[in-house]
Image (cartoon, rainbow, N blue to C red; front, side):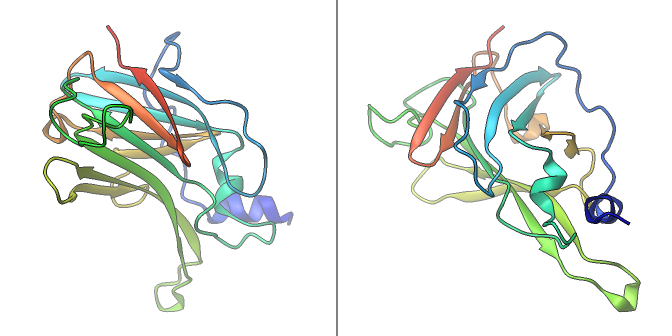
Length: 197
């Protein structure tokens, strides 16, 4: 059996098509990645869904290829995205990073990553990789965890499919204004977009 097929069989199944963004353009487009082992974000789509916010990170390669190596073993650290959310579009609330820093005013920080989980022979489970999401509050001097999810424990809130990872933040994780500002961290570079109408 080919190794990539084995990796796909060991991986958690995708949750289906995810949120329908229709013909909406991405709110953030990142420049073409330089290559390497780590998956890079190329687009961020965002939309309000009721009181919640749905975010889709599109990567430069299939998500499964970033979660497993060529032998089919799960790996950590090859898929990551960090997004700052200025939920109220007010630079005077949230993170105070300085007038020239695009993160100033951000109320929340969302980090998407991967955890490699070893095999558990007692439970008859093979090794796998979980896509995780963690949301933190940025108000005040101390960052505070607000919510955590992954593709197994919260499959309705963290989904994968093809080249994308989708995270659904319910209304209690906000509130999110229609004018919310989003800032994607790409190493030391920051790219800004707006949720829009």
